[in-house]
Amino acid sequence: MRFQKRHIALLLYIVFLLLPIYWLFNMSIKTNSEILGAMTLFPENPTLANYATILTDPAWYSGYINSMIYVGINVVISLLVALPAAYAFSRYNFTGDKHLFFWLLTNRMAPPAVFLLPFFQLYSSVGLFDTHIAVALAHCLFNVPLAVWILEGFMSGIPKEIDETAYIDGYSFPRFFTTIFIPLIRSGIGVTAFFCFMFSWVELLLARTLTSVDAKPIVATMTRTVSASGLDWGVLAAAGVLTIVPGALVIWFVRNYIAKGFAMGRV
Image (tube, rainbow, N blue to C red):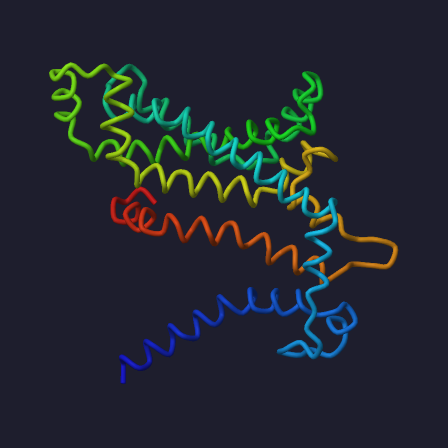
């Protein structure tokens, strides 16, 4: 009996989690008149017109392209910066290392709104406003500390004797780091890339403020869908469904790495 109750509770919990996603998809294949009419669990006249609007209107699909560009740039920069920094924290003891490590984490604790005005004024002055690199660099302020923290945990789990053996065998540091060490922590790199991707993909405040036209991401486009005729609920729902897809694909590819991160206590 207890076993059945536990399964029923788990099933109800899963339904509760999936209900908003189903309702979003349900709205995405309805017309606005049906959405604003009586509530129905299934669409009476399913339509893909909302998805066609997004895939054919440059104002919509360019938002996905812009988001992919600056998210990809951010993940690459965050990993390139965090890998050597995490290695230094995991392998060397130096004055103030613990304080510096804690200071990095405090940057991650601050809300994005704190840095909004400085970023906006700085980028406007140097001509980086409304560019992909502007948003990517702004997100690095939050992703790099998180990346260093996650990678340091994975690197600390690798015995230092591996480094010493490689040096005795004549490996230079760049060769050792790229050919031996990085493959050993590939699960940590996967976990780190996942979290950097997710923060940069869903972050709205900085992405919306630091862009206007050329680099406007999909999260900003979705908040500017009100027109003279009102809110286009169907198109907005379809955009929401398509926004979930990249995150779901990333989770699918790194799911094993995330499980290992939980096991190591760094996720």
